[in-house]
Length: 368
Image (cartoon, rainbow, N blue to C red; front, side, top):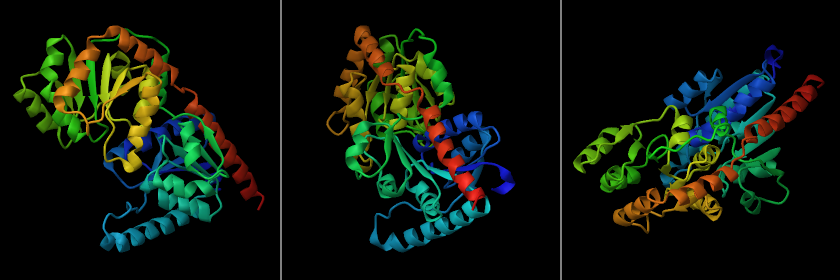
């Protein structure tokens, strides 16, 4: 191994829903094996680079392309991912990488395939109730799949080794479980790190009802639509705190009385740790409708209410929110149900499994 250090690569990112679980596991790995070198390989988004470096890990830019929507784009898709695969394979060999952790999404594919080609241990993280296309493709040859939901088993071949570990969540969220804090009359609107256009347009239409009921609203809009979202609230006569991105999410969610959000697996796992009741509005164009599947799992446990924006207009959406902020007992029941779904041990357990695979492979490599 290069520099005689255990070297583990986390492949993927693209969205923070993929990146954050990787960072959670990497945090635990760094505690368990302080001398280990950890590299994140991704497509180069600036916020991704910033977060990885802020956690003290290396970052590697790898060429990658999403599955083409038009046939004429197939050539660029193949060429881009082939280049990423070849450069990743060289990196894995030259840097003595012991194992690769695939975070899901197309960004993970070139590095994960390079790991497979070099017969390195490959551990896949799957945060959703229905596994993503790349993870379905890689799973039969992976060392292990760590899944958030038991339902993932039914979508993969029987020979796949799968453990239901829960979604790994950053340690800052785990600390929020230690104290049961009082909930503020605070509605938090989350559309993911890039915002959600439909939520940015829908919530301002009924925000005055929420504010008049004595609640405060904090709305994460994404950078691109922050100014437009602020203007929509102003035109509706409601004062709302609109931010492009919420830096200290754990403490905000720990205080929030209710959250309106998308239904990505990572978001739901974070809400479970903070015990925050939610109105889950699945992204209607998510691949294989996986966000709706996630929301259905949480709704069945009583932890959230599913609002399908394809079937609900803004007025009815506002009615659901208004009814829930007026029902403190229901919110308490939902909060308890949320906490019952929390898996605070997930990051540490997965880190242990990755370390076992990595050390075993490093020992075999040293003796080769």
